[in-house]
Image (cartoon, rainbow, N blue to C red; front, side, top):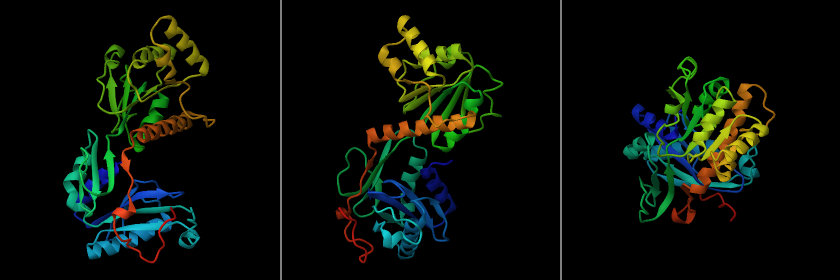
Length: 331
């Protein structure tokens, strides 16, 4: 699945007018979080989502008007009984955001973000212009966000679990690399693009250069001995998250062995998650894959929260609201 900035780049190639809508602030319950984005086209198409339902329909209507007038604007919507009853959207929270009908003018920024290889920070300035916002750029900002490359997911092993994990992980915006010494299994017939395949002797595979981005590791090889071999190397690497398939007994025995043979420290061993995956009573490889990736999503969200890449929108910096008839959200 294409990342949103890749979808903007694709929209630019179509040469069709669009407005960018984004949620820049949320209070209380809402169907989407700060940073949610969508492209609204004059023909009614929507790429991305602000949460669907009446919220998205309201912003879409405003985006169509903005495309006709050429005027950017802000919005503040209280998701109360009156606003959302017909569609069942009565979250009780509030959202505020921006509508940018001239977003295509920032084509250079969008194309750079689409091929993002290092973190880049962009924002919407007080005059609604879209700019790079790096190195503490001065001025008033309505919104700022840091865009990072997809989290890398290294999967050791190419068996049934890996084959179930890889395609789903790709749809969930992980950059997946599968490692194995079996070319018959680590093969494009089982792992179509965009999965990267690394095939060769394990001593070569375990020396893979470390990328300049957060990396999650998943050990699902064909047996205990191969798992232990990979773990003995990967446990020393700075994974943001490292999981291994197996039982608690397996984790305990390997931990005792690694300590006794001085393969790893107690601190390193404690970073390993085994058994990997959220406890959802999973049965079968596809359910196991779901449980693993649910945990990866959870850990990725924690990592993003720690780095705090999104700066909230402040309504007072944006001037008057675009809808003077709706009361502002409660503080």
